[in-house]
Image 1 (cartoon, one colour):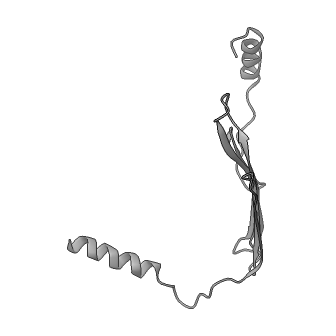
Image 2 (cartoon, one colour; image 1 turned 90 degrees about the horizontal axis):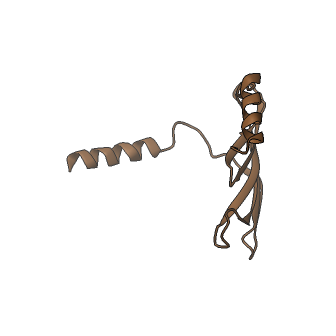
Length: 126
């Protein structure tokens, strides 16, 4: 029991404001929720951070009840050294996919793998 109390006090201490950091002002904020399940929102803060997202309901499987939310959006922020980084993303039946100039990308697929995949597709295996 003493351990739980100690952990609770530690959590409160860590959650407390650190130093003289003041909250960052939100300079613009918009949101929309529609009856069909679609939505959008965006905001911008005084430090230049921007967030935007929109989504809608979509049938993501073969059955009519296989409905899910598909979303897309972006966010950008300024690093401590003054570089603005932007991430664009999509979340749909294919998962979460983020793109950005600063994000790593996989190397190109070797030619023999591309040929093998084409052969498998032509044979009806893929």
